[in-house]
Length: 214
Image 1 (cartoon, rainbow, N blue to C red):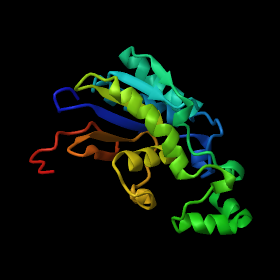
Image 2 (spheres, rainbow, N blue to C red):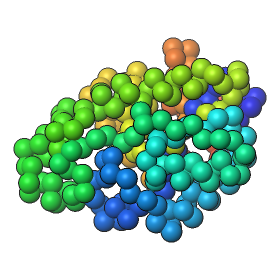
Image 3 (spheres, one colour):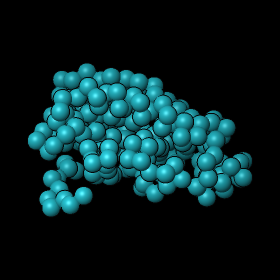
Image 4 (tube, one colour):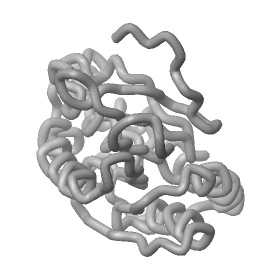
């Protein structure tokens, strides 16, 4: 992405897991990739390697670190691993399907669906996820060359919280950011007032934005 002006942060969700298929709430449970998830990571890594990233940073959960490893293998970069990039800790909800959560924790589940700040399963608030993830990302981004690219491999919920905080959305608006598909990514770049969201839930190489008036 050299030559596009300024540093870029590419936030890449991990590949498919068995619990994704079963629609179980993973949180910080350490679930591996499926064979399809490995294939997703390999396909995406071939695309992302073409961007010649300068650094790779990953959650320490295996579904993320194994996804990051596919890009590292193609680029020769090492992977920096940080627990601050883990998915939201969801306590008693982890391992349960939505139907099971709704049956066991109906009030919490209803509040979450309404978009209220909830400690899901008596776990973390979304703001607490951003509190731990964003400093990790920003510290790594600050070390990039002027036109450098950082790839951050993390989890759908954690990425949404990080993006919301970094682009300055009000905390009650973070849910307006659509969910990331497995092994898709979002791109942040420099704007006049800080980071801005350039691409979201992408699965192909980013294209230059022509005639950008923002």
